[in-house]
Image (cartoon, rainbow, N blue to C red; front, side):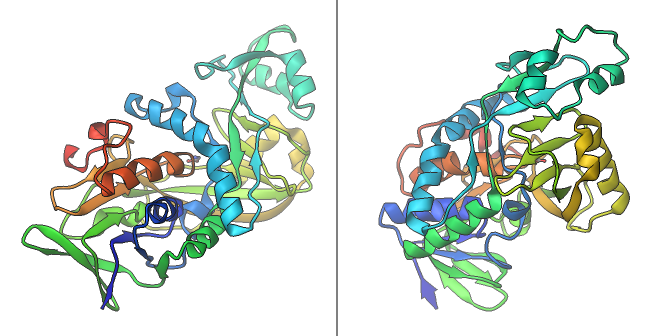
Length: 360
Ligand code: GLY
């Protein structure tokens, strides 16, 4: 029977980032992963590091800002320890809205400036879509200083960094239940083996809700996406009401996404993908001539109030860091910092009570 100080359930970006943070504090860590490390939501994500205030339930705003600020350092550390390169882009985001609704903090962008920022965007089609007769100098977009990251590169590098820091990883082992004795955690039972630890942290993403005996209302929210190549080279992330476009450094353009309550189903659907593609072409007509490279779907870990679950539970030694819904990539650095404090008995630098597992 393997024993470690802390068992983390789930080798997505949340589990891996927390494991690295705990290793820095000298804690021994075993990650137990039901499938392959880093191949679920972290692999499917778009990677927009969007921390604009009105996109989030209020209690999450300070954490989102803090995590966005932590990102450059977070990525540099992972690059250093993995020897890998992670595409962290600094070009910012352009938000397009037919109705002139932009997130708080967005700098107004006129149609003329938009043309110089992103020449391939068809701003006039936006104004026509809105059925409005506006002059070309009028405001039709907002600019946000947001970064984006390639989540696949990030999670692959985080996995290498975790291994470099002697995090033990058991893949293909699904946790069937938490082991509890006298009201305290003593480890986990997988379909293959028992692992012991005084502390267990559930970072199982969309699967976090179904680990007895402490179940929480986390459910999968499917998102379908596609990537095209040979599209106009956008510099910025582009977001509209219908679609978002996320350029990668290697020339891929990611187009997303749907929000579907269909259980653990990761199938893609040609009609849905076609609708996303058409919405992208409406914004950037040059995408019509691009080549489809890949389509996929991922499962976001949703909660009833769209807040993550962070912190201790009613079972001594059992913690949860899950339910990050659409923001797991953004929130990984702050989650790792806060949860490593919580797990090692330090006071986290933010009040975790709004995120408590006992709120349901
Ligand atoms: N964070 C992007 C999405 O959830 O679609």
